[in-house]
Image (tube, rainbow, N blue to C red; front, side, top):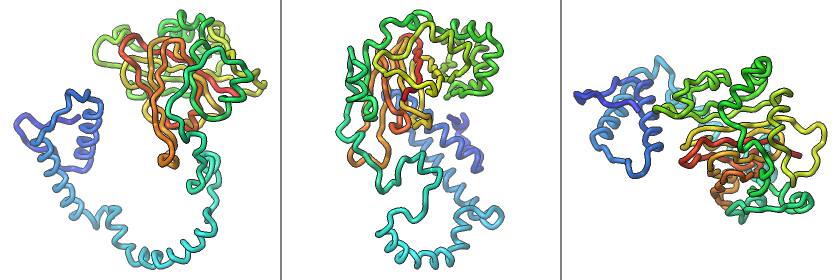
Length: 339
C-alpha cells in the first residue's frame, strides 16, 4: 500500500489519494500471513487525521460538488413524505411478498429473496470424496442436488495430466493464430491480480515470469470454444465417465485455470448455463464454498481440497466460491459444463 513519507509528513489531503491509500493498505494487510500482521499506532493516527481532513474538505465543497450527503439533506422533506407512505405499503407487502416483478433479474436470482429455497445446502458441511460411480448413481443421488462432490478416479486414463503445461498451451495457440484470435475476441479471459488482460499478454510473458522468478506472481483463467483448440485438447481428456451422454446442444466450451501457489480466484458466483466439473491436473487447490447470503441462517461455508487427479462437480451459479493454490508446483485445471 501507499507508505508514509520518511520524514513523517502526512499524505496529501485529497479524497482520491486517501481512498487509494486506505484500500491499498487494507489489501496489503489481508494478504499478509497472520504472523506478519503488526499494529502501527503512528500510521493509524495519521489515517485518522486524514479522515478528519477529508470530512472538513467535504463540508467546504458541499455546495460545489453536491455530494450524496448534501443531496439527501436537500431531499429530506420529500423523503419524509415518502416515509409516511411506508406503513400502507408495508401492509400490502405483508399480503404480497413481491410488489414489483424482478423481470430479467429473476433468472439470475432464481427466486425472490424472501422465499429463497435453501434446502440444497442445509446440513451440507463437506464435499464427499467418491469413486467408481455409475451413471445411474450419479444421476439419482448427486447430479441435480446442487451438492458439491469430489470424484477421485475421473482422470485416471487422461494424458492431460502429463501433457498440459504453459509451454504446451503456448505452442498450440502459436500454431493456430486464427484460433487464438477467435478465443481472444469471442471468449472470456480472467487475469485476476496478474495484470494480464488477454491470452496474448499471457503467452508473451517473459521466461523468468513464467518460471515464477521474481515477485510477479500470476494466476489466470480462460475459456475456449474454438473447434481446433478444443479438438487438440480433447485428445488428452474425455467427458467424465459418470456423466450421462450429453445432448448435441450442450455448450462445447472448456475452461482452463492455471497459476502459481497463493490466491487463485476471488470469492464470486458465476453466471454460466449449467452445472460444472473441474479436474485438477497439476498441483493442489482448495475451494472455499459459501452458500448464498439468503441461506446463511441455515447453511454453512466449507472447504473442499483437490489433490492432483481429483475432479469437483459443483453448481457455481449457486455456490459463491474462491480458490487457493497450495505451495508446490503450478496448478492447472480444466473444466466444462453438463446437462
